[in-house]
Image (cartoon, rainbow, N blue to C red; front, side, top):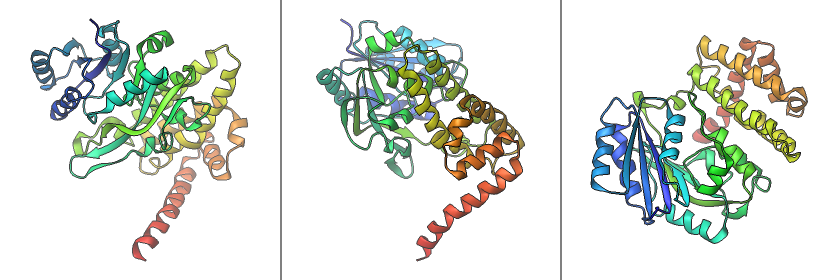
Length: 345
């Protein structure tokens, strides 16, 4: 008999963290699952750890492939998951889950019939413990069942793959797999799913623990001035836009407009804080790739923004990066001053 839930865990170079991750899956109070571990050509001892779990617990099994990246490993796990499973989830192999995560989400989906459930997350550091994830704070501020991104617009920022349980029939029917060969591969799947879903269950309860990797072991998405980060994140946004543009339904024109507005107001500005600290290759990558995205979005959307954002985007488009850096440093200093005053009061 097929398990009710398939959990896909891509594995690459996570030997210090993998046992903790797999232990948290094995300890779930919802026990009717399979865990498909995908060794993405990991050069360390991760595959040996996964092999031991597969030998000890029949719910765990290992699939091996040459290194192709996170998106490809997730897709491989999906292809090897039992097609009879009712639900599907993804876990990154350096993270963990609280024990009741899957029980909460599956019991909710059983009750509501929604296409997927998405939950809140906590960040954690080995030295200092758990704290709320800023990225998940706004969309997951309260529990809302049978809802939709059109009712909670901030769900457009719910881009991560791993804080969800999908109804397998919905995931398969959507026909959207993870893009391969780029970082930030979550959004081109997660954002379209929010628009396609008839209803979604949004849970304020933290159902995922998202690790902050520190020091020399920091993940590449934590390396804020790596040019690849800005290049791939822009490409991720472009893939979402391309998908929205390709949909024939008239309501998707409105969805594209709301997605672009969020990109301009919230997502692209995440790069601003790194530009003053970045070396020339990062600044050049920012200017080239963000400008391409801004041209695609168009001047009408940019014209609706506040003055500060409009100026920064115009400086970006004009390749006046020295002026952009100076302006951003002034804004960064202005933001720090109130904190300094509070700290010394």
